[in-house]
Amino acid sequence: MVKKINSSEFEQVKNNKAIIVDFSAEWCGPCKMLAPVMEQLSDEITDVEFYNIDVDENPDLAREYRIMNIPAVIAIKGGQVAGQQIGLVSKDDMKGFIDVVF
Image 1 (spheres, rainbow, N blue to C red):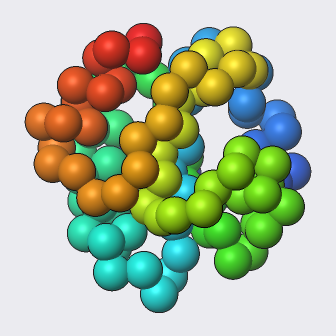
Image 2 (cartoon, rainbow, N blue to C red):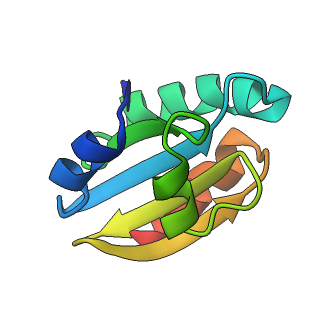
């Protein structure tokens, strides 16, 4: 399951072993198309935690991670950014990205 979180919740989970953060917005069509892909992957990849952050509700966090385009998926390992995937991609491509960074 992909859990929607805010900036303060993110501070609590960002140092976890392996997390995927999907930065998106309610008005973003490609973000809405990516959401079911992320849900499927969160069910399939159980050793990684999946989160969603709305850039409109958390602009400081989006700015901190230099999110200029959405959807933007960031892989964080031990508190450090391990990789970034920008834009709408297929389930296979997203799974490949996650496999490479973790």
